[in-house]
Image (cartoon, rainbow, N blue to C red; front, side, top):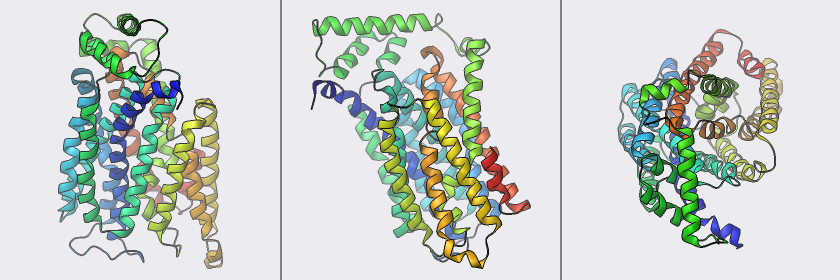
Length: 436
């Protein structure tokens, strides 16, 4: 291994551990896709007999968590700024673990909804906490690549959950998810807090220790201690340039009233709007039932696993691609490909008849390509930009504002899709998404 790669080992380890919280996010999001087919007639699983869910209740299981996440988003930013990036991730694991106990023992729609809302409460903390931490501890030349690792872990969680769900009952899968929560929490005990956050709290001694740990394999031209002191001073100067004097919450909010503040908010809001209304917020957590609705004879759980494998491979490849292509170019390619896929699905549904039974592979292949296209830009770039766009002294609050808007657009997009699905021809939602 080259000296350059060896010097990055502490950063890579810290990235892998914090990104593993996004593994929990992946299995949490996709568990809804595993669960919903048990409450609708289909050929793949035996319907749940202990209680039933109406069409409206199934839609609420998909969309209602978005109503919880604004509170979660606001608290996550404040918690990150107050208690640290790592402590925020650990605290988020508590409601997440409790949610699986409730889900595994649920006997009604209300219990399922409470469990889903509790797990969703943690998603914003996992995603934003990991993004901010990785952005702050990673060297600038590999920051984009390391930030993308959390997407790989999300894909790994998705694949694992689909594989488990294809073989085991949804209650058993919930208990497994509960046990998996302990892994990233335990590993996080071996990490150092972000030096940038430590400096912002006046804890320079701890920041110095963290810097020594992160750069213990790096070879410096000058004395190691002098080089670390230089890095510490650079962080302190960077923090001083960006912060106001002991900002309180209301004072931080004033930043967002200035053009440099609200322009960043509008940019992220636009990215998130197109991300959610491009179909990712509805199709992704409902992938198994989404495939079943096309009436194919294939096992939708197995197809979901194949899609999960493709997502994971794409996520890994994107670590390399992100270093070579601009984010703007990737977004353009991603949007064009996703639009083409949705247009294809719309045309297929418009002309679907029994004569097309030999072409039932079309919606499966198109859905696979749709997810690959989403992972090349639309599904990942907004999160990466959100982690870097705000100055340090308001980054937590900025992430909270971003999370709140995410929840509004996610809830709205799911409800709009369901409304179109129940009031117009089945092909129109796909044309609508393609246009967006």
